[in-house]
Amino acid sequence: MQQLLNGVFIGSIYALFAIGFTLVFGILDRLNLAHPSVFAVSAFVGIELVAEGGLSVWVTLPILLVVGAVLGLVIERVAFRPLKNRPDAHFAGLISSIALAGMFIALLQWRYGPDTRRFPAGSFPETPIQFAGVSVTVLQVSILLISIALMVGLTWLVARSRLGRGMRAIAENPTAARVLGVNVDRVTAVTFAISSALGAVAGALYAMNVNSAQLGMGAAIELKGLAVIIVGGMGSLPGALIGGLALGLAEVFAVQYIGSSWRDLIAFGLLFLILLVRPQGLFGARKVREV
Image 1 (cartoon, one colour):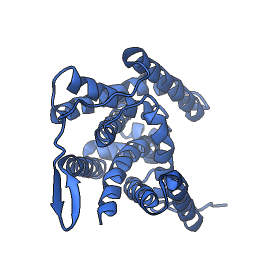
Image 2 (image 1 turned 180 degrees about the vertical axis):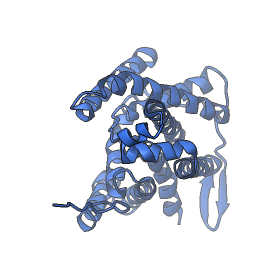
Image 3 (image 1 turned 30 degrees about the vertical axis):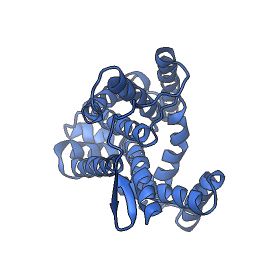
Image 4 (image 1 turned 90 degrees about the vertical axis):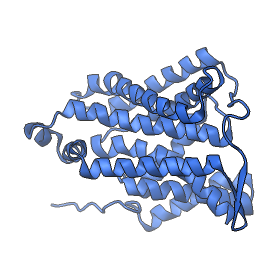
C-alpha cells in the first residue's frame, strides 16, 4: 500500500508534465522540445524565490505558473511562429525548440552555476501522517491534489470553454478554423502558455518531492514524458494521465522488489509491452487508411 501511494505521487507529476507536453502536440501538431527546459527553469526559480525571496512554497507555485506561461509565450513567438509558413514547419520548429532549450539551460548555468540546489530546511511541512498502516507527508498529499486540480481544470477548459472549442477546431483543421473566425495565432499562443505553465508547476513539484534541482533534470524526464504520451495515445489528455501514473507505479515497484538499477528497464519495458498489445496507445484511435 505504501509503495502504491508513492507511485501515485510521483506518477501524478509525470502525468502533469506529459499533459503539458501532449497539449501542444495534440492540438497544434507540434513537438515542443523546449518543454523540459521550462521544467528545470521553474525548479531553480522556485528555490530562489523561497531561499532568497523568503516566500512560502504555496505563494511560489502561483508565481511559477505565471513564469511558465510567459516562457511558453516566448517559445511560441521565438521558436515556432517565425517558421509556421515553411513547408517543413514541423521539423524546423522541433529543431528550433531544441536550440531555445539549450539557451534556457545555458542561462540557468550562468545564473546558478552547475551545482545542485535545494530548498532550505523547513520550506514545507515534513511531518508524516499515519493512516491504514501507511505514511504520507503533507507535501505529498499537496502534490497529488495540485496535480489533480490542474489536470481536471485543463480537461474542463478543453472540453467546455470557448477557448477549448477554438483549440479543438484548430486540431481538426487550422484553415477551416480561421475561416470560421477563430484567431488561430492567439489560440496557439495561449496553448503554448498553458502547456508551459503546467510544465513549470510539474518541475517545481518534482523539485519539492526530491528536494533537489539540477540542470539536467528536464532532460532526464523528457524521455519519460515522450514515452507517456505515446503509450497513452498521441494527443490524448486522459492517456497522458493514465500513462504517467503507470510509469510512476512501475518505477516504484521496480525499486522495491528488484532494485533501483532496474527501475528504468522495468518501467520502459512495461510501456513497450503496452505498445506491442495496443500500438495506437491506451486511448489512441486506430487510424483507418482510405484508398
